[in-house]
Image 1 (cartoon, one colour):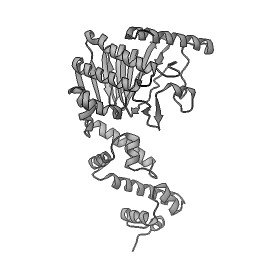
Image 2 (image 1 turned 60 degrees about the vertical axis):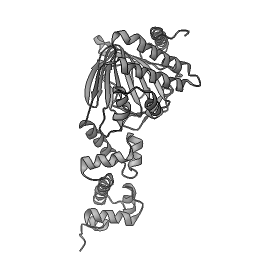
Image 3 (image 1 turned 45 degrees about the vertical axis):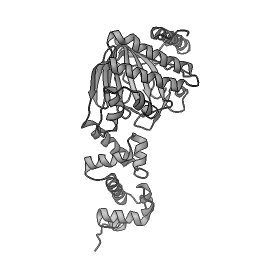
Image 4 (image 1 turned 180 degrees about the vertical axis):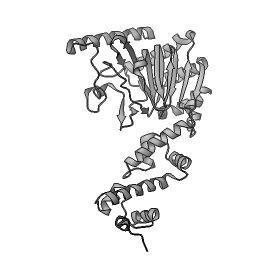
Length: 369
């Protein structure tokens, strides 16, 4: 494309979508193939080359490959057949188009290791963020922190939406130096350092500023589409410019604070993870899994349990060891391995501290005289 204004970009994408429809029609007899769980995002499939991120584990944490990604998506409801049709276009990918039809919500709750922005180009966008349903209209915009749990309610979405994701670690120094002080700066930097911080920020663009905002989107689309050597750095510059523009011209700025619910939800998920990974888990592993610094977990467990993470972990390990001693015929070394102990004296010391008995005495049902 010689020119890159947003209206022409949308027409170009719609042309690509129409071409993909005809390809699908020729190959499958359907413009929008029926969705099958796992067909587009399962590791090892050809569709993975389309995505600029990958899934990690069962909690659906998406990991961004580069500093930034962009994705234009469309939902269209087929009310007579109780189906919705979906297409997506990601510039710069080997297979930029994806489309299917489905009869139920497919999108699971997930988190990112990056900050995500959703802009409603047209229509209505419905999403659940940290258990609360929010509806966005045309020209509305939402910024979500990494770690913020959310999902699109696809059967209630209709329209065209622009997604952008950017890794905070790649932007922090630029934000500190060039981002104008204000609501967005506080959201992206100052507030994020606090234990309880805003998980998402909602804004709305006045109609008179839409064309200028979409001009910034066009510049970022061009960089990603062309994929030149310095496109990653260029995208960072355009994103800073856009955020500064948004700070000056966005209206109805609302921060949603989740001071009670978020730590509880996170605590519950961390506890479930710990119980399932007693043989390996430590604060370093939790940092890789949940993207909070290691000292955060001690503060969280002191707040929720009145004890350190290590005390909680030892208690859970001893509970599991007691179950295995009572309900299985596993040897002591096998039980130690399952609950993450390498040293027999250390295991015996912790077990005695928890129960007042040795593991053998506990298995036999005898107390120490």
